Amino acid sequence: MTLDADALRDLLCSRLCEDVGVVERPDGALMLRTHFRFPDGDGYPFHLAEAPSGGLRLSDHGHTLMHISYEHDIDAFLTGTRGMLLERIVGESSMMYDEGVFAVETSAERLPEAIFDFGQALTRIYDLTLLSRSNVGSTFYDDLADYLNNFVDESKLEKDYLAEVPNSDAYPVDYRIEGKSGVPLFLYGVPNRDKARLTTIMLGHFHRHELEFESIIVFENQAEIPRTDLARLSDVGGDMISSLESTTDLNRKLIRRVASSAAN
Image (cartoon, rainbow, N blue to C red; front, side, top):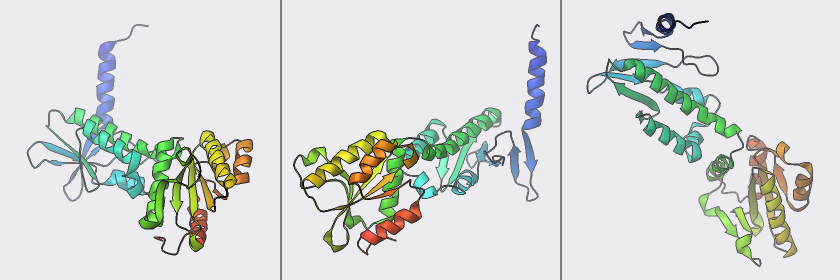
């Protein structure tokens, strides 16, 4: 079979023209109809207007972040690892970002290229939500830090705490939280098997040196930790939280142990 380049070119042009169009709303505002879709099937709302400096302005009118907010905490989304990646996408795509709105300015002649570039950039931004469900340790730690900073008073929270035991530099505590009755609470984030094993070693070291403390282990996904490693950790650890999704359980256990000046 011989491919007919001209026929394919005509087919692509006609189909793309069918998928992309300008729609005038009752209020006179212009929007673009494109093939870009969110996972739930909703189309990307591309608003088209005249740019203040001349030319055209494409904007999402804040809909991208609003869509993300349906299932995610936007404050957490805009900070940490995802926040840094978001800034990189905005810079690489030459977009503007202001108070939740993504936009790009272009000339009329370059509008077709701008539509596809803008759509790809918004897709990359939405795909950052997938990081919260992947085994990315740095994102898990960011989410854990955001949670603790919102829940525990800053004066009662110490990150990378070194306990008063021999070789303390080798046994850092993820978070030390001032507990009730003066007994500190050691909190560890465990995203994988290796961290589970390391935490077991550190807690065992503290117990051997008769350090007085309580502990909470927060897993990224407890179901992914091998049974043997989980059993060893449970022998030396205190309460365990299966994942950061179990916020109700974590809130309850922190309130029971942490001094009453917790943020929530």
